[in-house]
Amino acid sequence: MHNSEVKNCQNCKKDFTIESEDFNFYEKIKVPPPTFCPHCRFVRRMIWRNERSLYKRSCDMCKKNIISMYDDGVPFPVYCPECWWSDAWDPGKYNQKYDFSKNFFKQWQELFNTIPRQSLWKIGKNLNSEYCNYVKDVKDVYLSYSTLLGSESVYFSSNIDNSKEIVDSYNIINSQLLYQNIGSTKNYNCQYSYWSSSCIDSNFILDCINCQNCFGCVNLRNKNYCIWNKQFSREEYLKKIKDFNIGSYKFTQKTFTKFWNFSLGFPRKYGRIINCVNSNGDELLDSKNLSYSFKGHDNHNIKYGYRITHAKDSMDVCHSWAELAYEHSSGGSENGSNVKFVVNGAPALNNVEYTDVCRSSSYLFGCIALKNRKYCILNKQYEKEEYFEMVEKIKKHMDEMPYTDKRGRIYKYGEFFPYEFCPHGYNESVTNDHFPLTKEEIIEKGYPYKEKVDNKYVITLKAKDISDNIKDIDDSILDEVIECEKSGRAFKLTKFELEFYKRMNIPIPRFHPDERNKERMKLKNPMKLWHRQCMCDKISHFHGDKHCEVEFETSYAPDRPEIVFCEKCYQQEVY
Image (tube, rainbow, N blue to C red; front, side, top):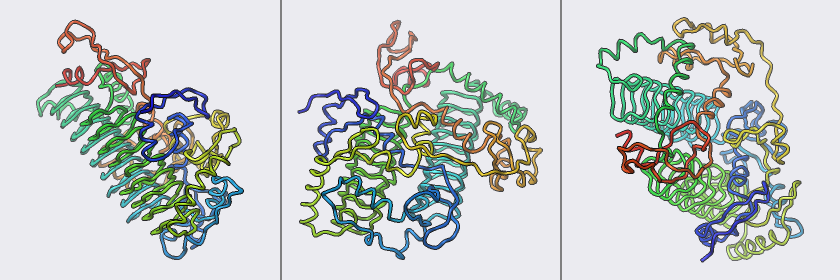
């Protein structure tokens, strides 16, 4: 039985604690304890996931023009998804004999820099979805990312599961006809909806459940025809809504500010955790025993998880559907088990370590892009007995001859891949969405940085000159190159987009899609927890005339303006 230990992170130099149960997990999967703190481990994994920075280039196999997350400057070949998934090439031919005179990570990098990569990460059958990344079985998806499970007609959104007709939204499950939603589940025809579920025909709502026809409402349950939390008759409600100039950009901007300030007068639950047992983090659903985890549903026994689904008994996992996973960055690894140090997983991986874009394989070490293979090291085939002998020798060799990066960080067995191997810049990665840094900060911390060059377009319409109301917009705007009101970058509207705005009575956005995403990210809580006490002092609650003494871990920082309640006080308030 291990006691908890305090370690010093070799990256940020801050102390972090490894708990007793953490040691039990490390022993179970046979890895040493980490030398990087949880935050630096997250950064190290997610710097490998570039969703949004896309480039035009050609496929190195079929030579057609494609969209890619890799620019022309990368050392490895880049294939379009059709070529990459085809049988026209054999990843097994890119193999290396392990060299005990060189460290493992350097040998893996040599393999990584020679083997072809998929231009965009796409799995399954994807129709009319050229301009998107990290998708599975989707249709008509445009400039959207991490969009899965049969989603259709999704524009400018990310983290979307099994949803249709979704625009400018984030973290959506089983919903349809949404605009500017965050954290929505089973919503229909909702605009400016935040962390609400099972709501219909509603605008400007926050933490509402099973509500219909609500406008400007917070913390409501099972309500209909409410405006600013006040009950109206159906006739009164429809008359007032008709008088609202919802199609006006000025009206929606003014209303959002009023709505957000209005919401601060109501208590927030310490975490957006629904139908979960013994769990902390944020935006968790239908899960059990989750710790320090964010954005997941249907998971069990996870610590340090992000964007996880049907995952089990894992630590330090992102975008994972696997069991017994550790240091998993991306790709899902659906129906996988005992997967460790994975850059991009894929279905049916078992007993693999230090792999990238392998699928339907087992017993791999240091392999890339293999499919339906067993007992391979650096893509080279071995007999079963020799494979296990070699793996043990390599792990020992990794400790005896570690990789040391330019900042003096040491990588032995048990560490994820070094930052400097990553083909993406920190500023291109998902990490920058959650923990944004300036160019100077990125370089100072020793992370890779990618210079971006915007294509030059002739601006034909400034955002300030767009008609205020959607009813005054005609199809001629589809020919315009619009200048972003915030960044000055150029963007255009698509036909679907304009039809959606007109159908939903939504004003034309004034910001570039990337700037709209940044504004959404500002509304969500950080992926960090603080230990706090419930702020409730209502004498009608279970604690009577005393201040509630319940303590919890919450993603609401102590200096934020929200009123934060524990579970019991919050439930007494809203029901």
